Image (cartoon, rainbow, N blue to C red):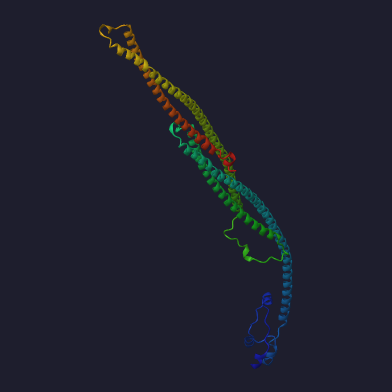
Length: 451
């Protein structure tokens, strides 16, 4: 029992050979195998059982050898097949990899061309927007200058109206000059409102242009960055030393857009930018037309006011000249009337002596006595003379009264003429020396146009 436990156990049986030959695999526990079986091919008894328990039979040896040979042949054939398949697979995968890499490089090149085309369009439109915004900014400055320039005509017109309020007498009239000045004030106010409205539109359009330019610049910056990355990717090859594995980079993210959305995004940006460019150009044309028309309207109204002033001053000058002529005539007539009054007074005085003589004769003849108191021819002559002298004195007194009344009327006319001449002089001073001289500071068309 002790000798059977120290004997060397039989080696393990090859399961692949056993499977090929149809035999069962040996028991893995050697002690159990010694206890439960006795080698059938030995002729020895129990004394020699331990020496032969570790040996194989010739059939087992042949089967094992055959199994080894078959297995080696199968392994060699399998290895050759794997090598052949590996070479074919390597050639196929190399070709596929090269084809795929070439296609990827080609697609990157096409993508670079697309990005370059869109980027160039963005650059051109950004440059156009910058130029358009600069032109619109210059137009805005012209609007601001034109709006500031309208303050001078407004101040001139209001000052003219204020100055003409200082006219007095019959010259304080609502004439054509005042009507034209009121028209000028209303025109300036409407032009100022129009310029302010246009200026607000210009400021809004400049803001929109700059916002659109910023949007295009962001898109251009993204495309520039993408172009740089794709260009770097296109330069990668199998011999590049700056490549490494990024397993998670092949996973597409949910927010990644497709190529059509990418194109539509840039097209929409370009379309919106072109729309703002067209709107800006139209606004600039409107500004140019507004500035030209407003400056022309102001200058035309200024010319109308100046013409009305000239016409009014000419009328005032003519009226003043006529008044001065009449005043000279009145003064001459006053002198003549004063001389006439003196002449009449002298004539009345000259009739005093003959009247006294005639009346004295009649008086003394009343003292004739008795029948001598008769109505003789001298008496009748003296009565006629006294009556005639009284009538003459009365006529001279009436004529002297008329002359004095005429002199009073002439004095009133003189005062009226002098007052009216003074009024005309004051009106001419206001219209010609103040208003028209002030209007010489009226801005020119160039200044009113914002230059």
